[in-house]
Image (cartoon, rainbow, N blue to C red; front, side, top):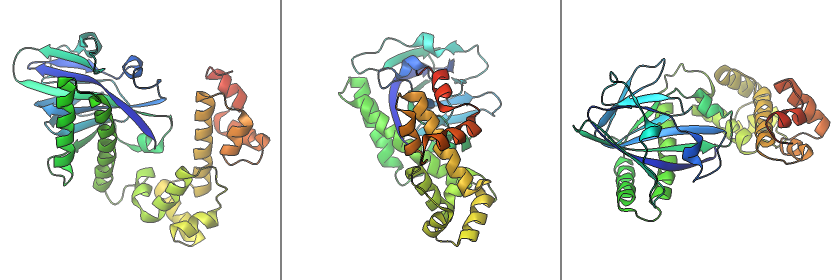
Length: 309
């Protein structure tokens, strides 16, 4: 999963406070064009808060904790969620020389400071993001790497406050690292009976095959080759993969190739014949047939529907 990101907001609140928040396209423009997939995050520098998302129990976070919203769902943040929420977008002050907007809002009580940002993925159908819960929390208090990461975040945050050059970019890189840490922690906490893509990622045999399929999707992988790299016999690998991921290895690889091809069609004007070759198809005709089976429309029509001619 290739990520790029940015930090767009340094927010300071005083109790009581409550806001409605969601990363918007205009928050991204100074860092990149709008990516197909946005992952929002809030890092608590100081104080504590509660996050609420429709259909999910409220989640509390305090100093040195990171909240990640893999699907950038609209949510409430506050010291209390009983008050009428203010629109975060309407509270943002114009960005300074460091490129960060700022919020200073609340009733004058105990202070909470958070850094808000996003990670962008060019893959609109990433199986990792699709498999994650709506909110993932990472606590740096009890981690071996926690003091280093937390110290780096605080240093970058202080640079933001003082207008230090490169502070926003440093925070963006740290956010990518923290996202990876959050995923590792979530995987470790999965119950043994958990099934699905994340369970496959945790399994050493299936994980090797997934790494190959995602790292080199255009390779003409055969079931025998994937099994050999995984370290299992063909039949044992196939059974193992289906039991955990709930789809056959060949079907999984086909989906990944076609999803990547769809993203290429959506984002670029690259000739369809080249996209077919990148996806591992021997001809544009065979690619078109497979694409139409998956998406119900031919690649050219799909591209036109997405705004590319």
